[in-house]
Structure formats: structure tokens, C-alpha cells
Image (cartoon, rainbow, N blue to C red; front, side):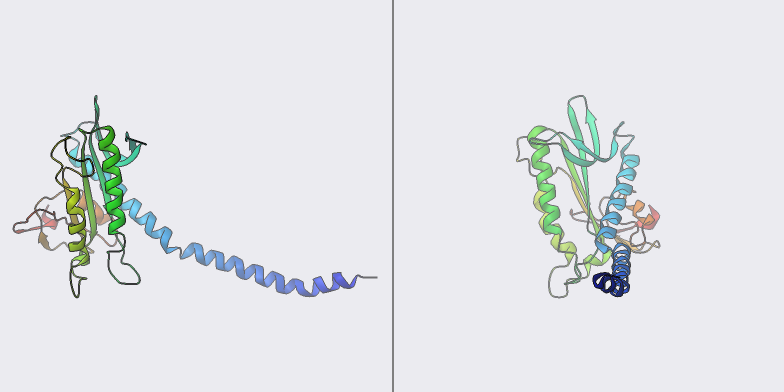
Length: 235
């Protein structure tokens, strides 16, 4: 004689299977539309492309310069640096690449993570200069061009970034505090391959490497006072 309990379980089995299938479909949707992971992967790929291009640009002046987030000696722990040039005495040049590529969904601006990037640059500089005070540290920061135009009632995201990062620039020698970089560049990337002219003081083909990405194309400005516009397309 069949158990009443077994009969109850058999009657509920179709519902259990339906819920299980719904959960599997939901998990697939989460993986497909995992925007946070896609943003992270995109930003990492962009930084990798820029780092490799900087190595190409700087290779003649710095033979043996390397790209890739490998570690450089720090005061308390090794610090990952995107582009590195080592001398027999230690790190000669370290270049950190930072990008903000996506608007904040709530406010529609690029300001959400600017303070986080600033803290990262500060931590990198303090650690490396604490261990290798003569090392030259530089930073390259990029965000999409429309970051210049999102300040409806005040500063744009780009102007805000320049104000925040300006204090990290200008360390002249090893006797000064180790929380800054020597040179630093802040710039804008453009969402079209047909680049228009934009103000630029210092230019590099490294930003042209961003053309491999759908949202970006060449273009860089500096936090220094700029002169006449130059065409990124002509470089």
C-alpha cells in the first residue's frame, strides 16, 4: 500500500520543478545582465590597452619599461602599478592609470567615484615614496568627454576632478611629502572615431588606443593652462 506521504510529495513535485527552473532562468539573467561586472571588465581592458600604448610611446626613452599591474616596492606592502620603469636602484618611474567610464545611475554624473580614485592615488604615492622616495610617480586620469558638460548648476564632473586631483601634483623632489605625483594628466575621451578639436597642452598616442572601445576615442587635456585646440584625429 502506497504511503500517503509519498503521494503528497509526488503531487507537489511539478511545482518544485517549476520553481527550480525559474531559479535557473533567473540566475542566467543575472549573469547576462551583471552590469557591475561588465563595467569592471571594460575599465580593466581600457586601462590595459592604455598601459601597453604608453609602453610603446615611452619605450625609446625608457628601455625596459613594462606594462601590466605588477607590484612595485612599498613602505608597508608592494603596490600595483600599471606602467613601471626600473633602474638598478629601484623604481625609476611608476605610472598609474585611472578611468571613470560610466555615469552614476542616480545623479547622471561622473562624480561618484572621484574621491575613491583620489584616495587610491594617495595610498599608492604614500606607500611607494615611503619606500622609494626618489621614484617619479605619474598619473593618467580619463573620463568621457561629456563629463565637461554635465554641470547644469555648477562645476562639471571634469572640473570637479581637476580640483580634487590638483593637490596630488607638483612633488619636486624627495624632500617633499610623499602623497603626491610629480607629473599628472587629466583628460577626456570622446565617443566617436571622427575626433573633433579639443583643448590640449600635452598629447599622447596612448589615449588614441581608447578607439578600440565603443565609447571612447582619442583626446587628452591636461590640468595645466592650455593653449590653442589641437585635433586628436591628426595626431
